[in-house]
Amino acid sequence: MKTLIVEDDFISRKILKEILAPYGELDIAIDGEEAVKAFRMACDEGVGYDLICMDIMMPNMDGQESLKLIRSIEKERGIHEGNEVKVVMISALGDPKTVVEAFYRGGATSYLVKPIGKQKLLSELRNFGLIR
Image (tube, rainbow, N blue to C red):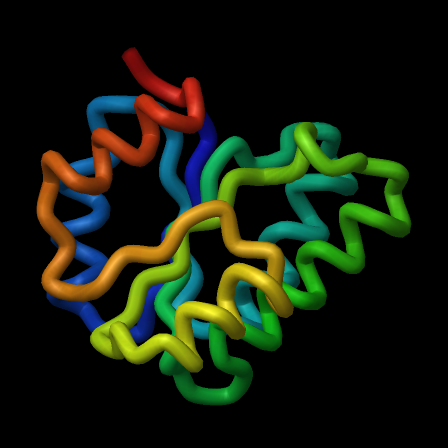
């Protein structure tokens, strides 16, 4: 599994890395702009991501905006629903407005509220069919 972790907070990045490292290759982006660049570069190289774990509140470009751009890149490249990268949006915010924005406007696959629990994240990945 090839994963992109998009998180501006060092501790949150470290936790995600520790949880996901046993399951494959990891790349890191510290904001939404880097995430979009990394996603585009991976697509250009023909080795797209299976999973993106993305914080919502980040400097430069937030997770909502970068997710919209990533979904737009997929459409441009003919990647159809069902074959899209699985995107877990992560936030300290659990309010309904933020959740609705992530799912319905952004196209998130899942939404988790911080602090991230290892079992909850791994359960989501099992549900996606990314791990056993």
